[in-house]
Amino acid sequence: MKDRYTDIHEYIHDLQDAIEKDPKCAIHHYNLGVAMLSLGDYAEAEECFLNAVRQSAHMAEAFVQLGGLCLRRGDLDGCMQYNKEAAECRAKFPIAWANIGFVHLQKGEVDEAIAALTKALTWDPKYVQARATFASALYMKGEYEKSAEMSRMVIQQEPAFGPAWNNLSLACFELGEVDKAKEYAEKACEFGYDVSDEYWNLLQEASQKTSSETA
Image 1 (tube, one colour):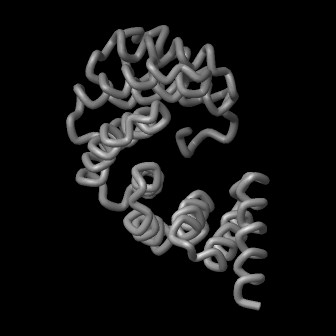
Image 2: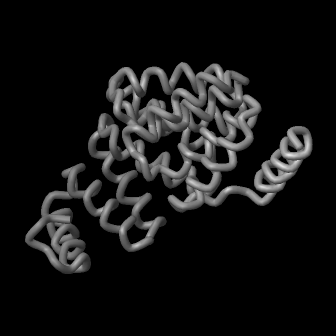
């Protein structure tokens, strides 16, 4: 929202007035969509982003937003398609490639996910979310040491990024480093990540087994 506004509703009203005067301005439609998102009005936001791409078929940001709305309602195919359109509009758009990688991973298409995430990190090496998703992909591929290394890179950049601590914990668990896995799971919880009860039980069982073997 523009700095001069203190009321989101005033901002929306002014955008609507601007659109009425210039209905072909894609940026106004896009900004109105973002404002509607902030209010949780997802249906209206979607219509605004659709209007934005109707007026400007190369507005990559609007396609990404549409993909996010698809993901919110569980439509992975829609999310994929919109992000592919965003990447076609702007080939070096890291957010689009990271989202494509995420959807591939949700579908269990690990190699395709890694290919897309590699592109995202090529265009933005500091993209934390893309690197964390990459760590998940490496974990799913069984490359636990590489997954752990990737998660440590994320944590070095963003020490309070809970999902990275969880990924690191999972990788360490598979590497047989139970104490570290438990420590990192606790870190994940500390930073707001909801570690599953099932995983806590696995950690507890492994820790008890290790203790009995060393007793």
